[in-house]
Length: 254
Image (tube, rainbow, N blue to C red; front, side, top):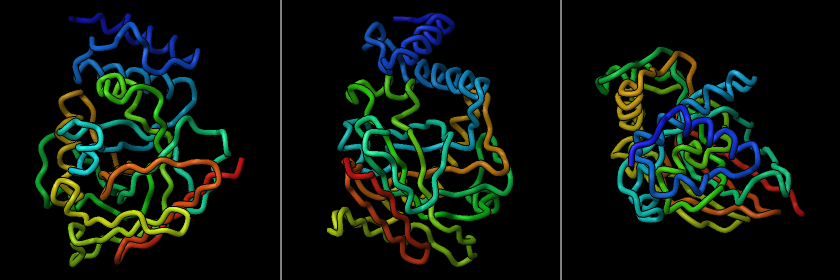
């Protein structure tokens, strides 16, 4: 069923204001392209209202995440906030929160459309160990609605930056994830489209299809090495990335 984009954006904006992030009138109605157009229009409204878009996320890049959500192609969403490693969110600040374990890159130069691996590597300024903090604001079987609602994105927690050395092989970086002191997962960069750099190539081309480009200074969450984990009040999550560094996030006790 086709939709009227102007009407849909207004409906989503109005629903969001009352705390409904997956409007029921749009269940099973959106294509993924519809969802991206709604997402970008809503982000433009949020920016006009005073927020600042600082980058992008690429999601559903690793097989464990794809199997977790039953969707087998990458997706994108927008980033509007970062927090430093060790940040503690309030016990009730987030909606059904969780985290994904990712490398976050910051671009030193822009990219647009179809780009080569060499162009991507040359564009990367620094890399951060990071967590994407997500919120489950609706039924994740409705992937298009989730993308219209900016792909679960809530925040990004980043550790200290490191320069991308000529010899750095991101596909060989290992992440070890601990939740409340217990190791819950390990994963390699190769889980992310064979190499996290491939996420940036995919994103540049996909954004070009929607009239957008990657800008100097943008940060990009390249995709989780392992599956998504929930967070609860009192939790402490830590990830260590070999050769990159460490990141930590906390949820305050209730």
